[in-house]
Length: 205
Image (cartoon, rainbow, N blue to C red; front, top):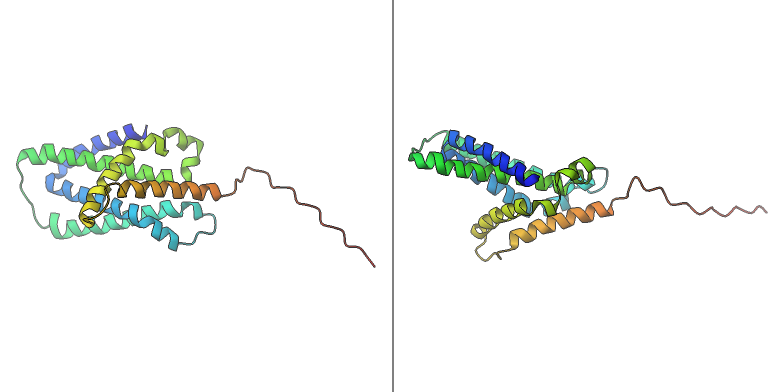
């Protein structure tokens, strides 16, 4: 279901891409791709620096991904709008502003929705019965995760020339395993407490 929802969101972004044009849609896709890449590779380090005690500790990794991605996207797209798209209007042929802009819009929507679904999958929200029925699990999101890994791999190949091809997929797998391990360490609130051994009575003189 997550895959088809991403397809629907991508179709909506096709319309938005055609309205924005090729140049602005490319800027939007670039900002989202960089933000997702930084979130995938930096979230574990940020989560380690965050406090892990308390009720919000299972959400630390997911919140780290969301904060990094949201902050980086705001900075990149804001800077792009202020210094590029709002200052210059680049005229492209109609095939660019319709076909290519629509294609980039679809990829933007599919990628953005897949990342949101991945963040929810990593968070304990995915353990809710209603949410789990939607398909927020790694097995149901193989295509969506593969799209995120492909996008991160493209950015990673530019950022590091000697980067292994599966570095992005390995980073995503590490995020999922770390989140599952964190949730496994959390005590089950529905499980009854273990009986305590009676203390020995103090003997008087």
